[in-house]
Image 1 (cartoon, rainbow, N blue to C red):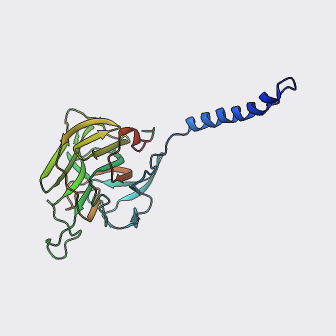
Image 2: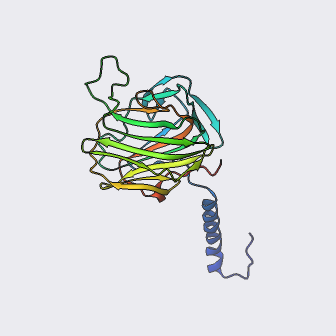
Length: 251
């Protein structure tokens, strides 16, 4: 914008800078936070290549597919035998933690486990893959599907602690994207859907050891998931809802 010669030299110097600042602020306000933004101490899993996830090797079973969505690449599971086994427990050793994911359930069976982190041990039968016990230390997300709605099941267990966070009265429609999280801050274990607290309890959590993860099923191949997962993030500290990944503003 042209400046009139009647303006003072002082205004002539500061007005363009002020306008530039206002335009920059307006531009920033119009750009949403990316749903896969990293934070310090986090491990991000993006699902655009099933050979490696988060830098870890992947074993693919069934026929999970990388699909294009309005929010970006996601991995889709058919609820039958699709699964990914990832050679990583990204929260091994963590004394506090946050697990987040953006996913889209599609209905189907009542019990569906779609994210499972498990500690590996040496006392499993030879040839077992992954080499983790079905009932050892673990962290996981499940959903319970009732008709065209679902509710969240967050769970962790290990020596001296075993807790399920589940509220059947808090249900959500299938077929939409959701952000879910579970957080442990050194005392209290909490679960969230789209940043809203679902349940909480104090637990004597103990850090888990190195291990494996499964996506789309239990680590022992049960309760397969029907739907898609866009991204997951694992942080070795307790995040607050304002620090969570952003759910895509689409359905």
